[in-house]
Image 1 (cartoon, rainbow, N blue to C red):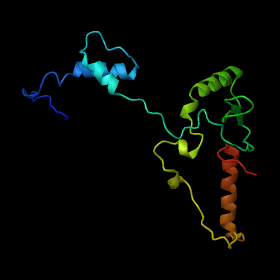
Image 2 (spheres, rainbow, N blue to C red; image 1 turned 120 degrees about the vertical axis):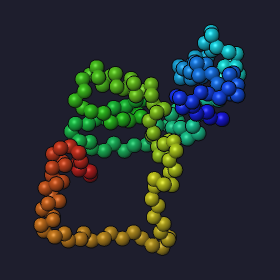
Image 3 (cartoon, rainbow, N blue to C red; image 1 turned 180 degrees about the horizontal axis):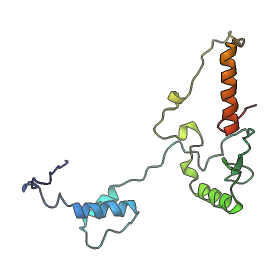
Image 4 (spheres, one colour; image 1 turned 90 degrees about the vertical axis):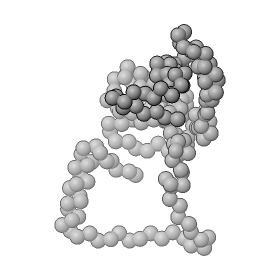
Length: 178
């Protein structure tokens, strides 16, 4: 049920005028986007029936309200720090360390009000299958993991890699993990 009209081509006269109402459609969209429960005063009554048909669906796998995720704090680069959106150091987020006290407070308050928007677990990311994002190594019960020895790298390439890693460390783009 889509209609296309080219500027120099008149809209067909056999289209029902009540069906094609761009002004009314814009009012409906604006009301829905603004969460207005009342229709505009100059609009038809069919907005009420349309609004009753809409359902709010909450995601099934939402961590908000559940227990906060188990996170093991790791050492962060010097320009970052942990902030917590809940009491007792729960709901951790990572923020910039060089923010002023007012900026940190404002940021944390905004994050607290938008806590549902943060994907705390892999299953919270809407539209992404966790199977796609995870890699499982299937080992039989009698097998044990093996550690491979470090491979040798050409000394010239080794120096190039070392210099590049040092540049990235200095720029703060990467940081050592323990």
